[in-house]
Image 1 (cartoon, rainbow, N blue to C red):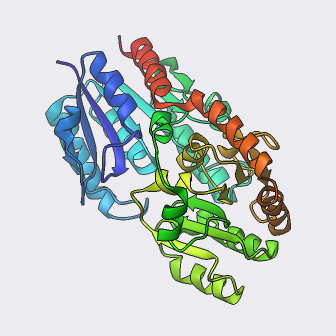
Image 2: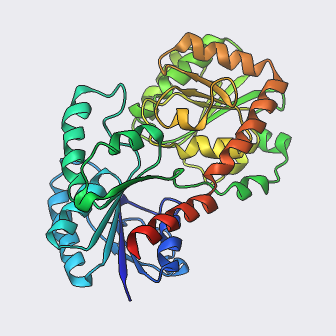
Length: 372
């Protein structure tokens, strides 16, 4: 049986990040293997009929641990004799392609979940990282992109064997799960300290500088509306700093740090607005989930976000540091329930294109064209 290796970085569960590739690969008869740092893995790989291999990958590209990871990955590839490598994430993409070239793997595919050289990126990203991607493209037969900006950029690369660049609509979101949510809105809100008449904003993601929660918190303070409550779902190193910011702005009772949550769909269902002032994204799953839940979105006008939200239709797009503008749009939506409903309805229609079933079909088309 032919073998495919799907490489990522750090993984605790099997999610839509890999499921479209698993299904598409198995439909073509591949024995599907996955390699990543599986420390703390909490899933049952046998449910998906895949084999997982732990590699000591580190998220930091300059970590010496990645030297060991390279040796482990190369040994694995040589031992299993994979026909295809499909690598993802920056670190997985680098090691996967270097090892694949060294081991002379027949076909190497790379999914770019967001190039580091994006519009407005620091000079380092637009020079060194861009050069690195161009260099690695020469060891790559297929590049898959998930937003229009990256697709246009990758078209300029020279791939191995005159390889091709494809676009797919992200990793997919299962829109059916959001339709099936049944929650007592008033009781659920009460359970997390909210009133039925509050205007609830929500965001999900790691508490890191790139996600730019500071602008969201400052905008809520600027909006000066005591009925506004902001749910922040996630963990990360900026937690303490963000709590201090909320306290200094005298809105600590309006900002709710919920930590890691497993009930995101329920939380979205009792919210009114999705607020996302991030600096950098590929194609954000959090916005896709908010759209599937029928929420209007106030988001930063950056790559990925602009692929999902049409300004003035499904929400509003602004500069991530435009505190006054963000606050104004928050108040606009908070004051107009019908506008929130209309924008939410628009997003439910738009997100159908990004449903996981559609992503599986698109991935299978690429595999069929490139691997058969």
